[in-house]
Image (cartoon, rainbow, N blue to C red):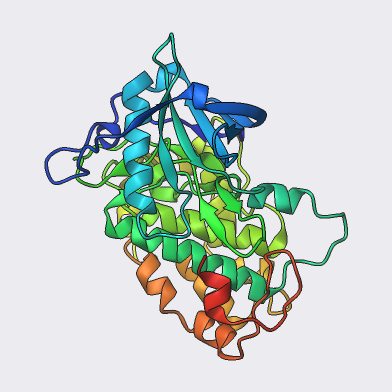
Length: 356
């Protein structure tokens, strides 16, 4: 787990059980953890631990997630299960919830999910030094899947709040990516104020600026950060863990400081009135294209990236709008999409690449 993870505050209204009109509470069939044999630890962090396990009767490989006690115990497990179930319904690009299991003796509940492969973070980290960047067609295929997953999620009024390479898993054949870890997700039926939550270096500027009525567009900002990382192999905005100010400076040093024309709300924030004068932060020019020249990203690809990485959420692309972008139409027009996420382009139809 990255060091800049920000858990949701305990009193965050967005993390409370959804009121009427939100998610319906589902009655889960509770299995027993005795039905599973834990094989290896897949990951561990502030939110708990994830294990690879085998269902003793069928031999099926699954992922078991145990939440840290501080995250609400049984209620926290059922809350995350409800988000997984709602987001993964008819959504091939979200990790599927298989059920909830109880540990005999303690009553501890665990999530049982389909077992994915390595994460996009691990894929990028394990590439040999000096490897060429991922082909643009590969980035396009991954982004189409992620935006499709996010649109379906947002249609259900669910905000993930922690989309990042570590929370995007590859299928074993590397044909499909799946969003996982809904530990800090929220439902828009909950009323603001909403607390900051997620991983700081993928966090939208409005969240860093303590805007308490943010919405689903915090996820499309995170997707822009993921896209940038897929293109270059490194994080675009790297601030300092546990401090919002350096993270905002990292963003504004690339995209420029917002003004009354680009983001009127920004001028009223404490950062603009009190912090910026102390920092003497005057960068006004957007330098994003300098980091993504046409040799790295085509004109259409860059237009999509800049639409996702727009500071003002009112001008930022929604997942639905992004899916209609010309970049996808042009990339797929020739049917030249990669068979696998980490391979060079080859002939394959869009449907085979993008549908599990």
